[in-house]
Length: 173
Length: 253
Image (cartoon, rainbow over all chains, first blue to last red; front, side, top):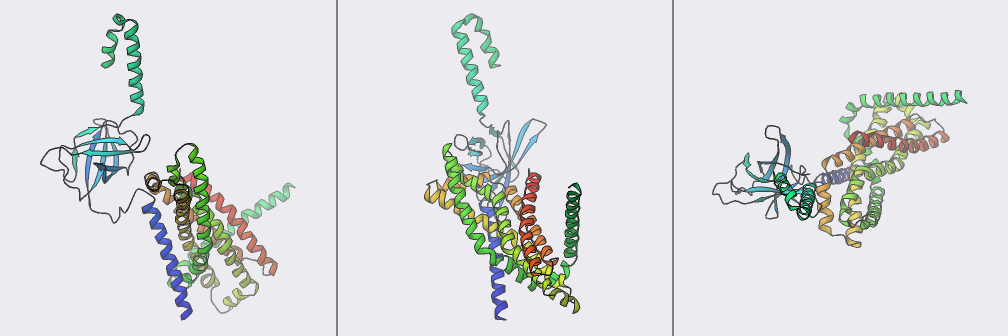
């Protein structure tokens, strides 16, 4: 009896330790967090022209404080926009309806996240609400393209102003 | 020459076939054994809890080496903060399951094979059959299931200890920022990485335990035969683990 007691104790603590390790791996090393037992959340959607490399699970923050996560990313083939589903902690339920959502980059080359900026409306976003004002991700290639375009434009301006004159207006179109 | 090669090839096929046949016998006999859980519990203790010390020590050192090597490499690109990501992905997907399985084959697999082989050599298995006790149900299935249950848990423990080992070297000794170590890891490691590791360790657990009980159960009933069964348990397990590792990695890509 004594022996089987210590044996069961050993088996039990081993299995417990093993499951604790599995739990640690799934919740602490990934961005899932304690989603299973996490606080109640509500869902918001936002449509972006371009989300860059935003990933599911990326943080949603307001004033730098994480208030939720990106739950799903979809493509709306009717208006050619990316539809991002945000799952926001129920505690932060006072987000004005005219708030705007932008996609920012963590650090210079880090991952993307969504930053919300509060608007001034008196009504608040509810579950399944939509954020209307959005700003696309900052795409490095576009910026480089613009810089190059500006560079060639200014070069053309300086060499032959009258010949280059119609070109910039074409480009701005 | 070719005849010999052909013969060894057909021998290998025959072995594979009888291992699969043995696996089916084990699976068919599993439900009645589940009712006597104390048998399985004892084997979880033997295969799992008793392997804990070697698994934890190895995990710690593997993690520490990863921390050191990863730091040296990442420092060249000025991205030491990615150490947490590198170490965790390496441990959870690859090193955790594989090294644990190799150690498991050495620590628990050999014990299973030699125990069963000695039972065979001393006619204990035949004696059970004489008493109308099915040795597969009474002896083999509990050992097999104990190994299958213990292996994923051991691999998870290995990975967690390894991550803390990498953290110990990277953060405490080399001075990587603790916050970015963990936050970069959390944003880069996905749930699929963890499930890949769990799938691997489950497959390795089945393979290692099956090979060990098969080798032991069908050991030649001599002292030499038991020794050979133990050796071939380790050799076959190692090859099968690395082969399965490649297959599962490819399947998850």
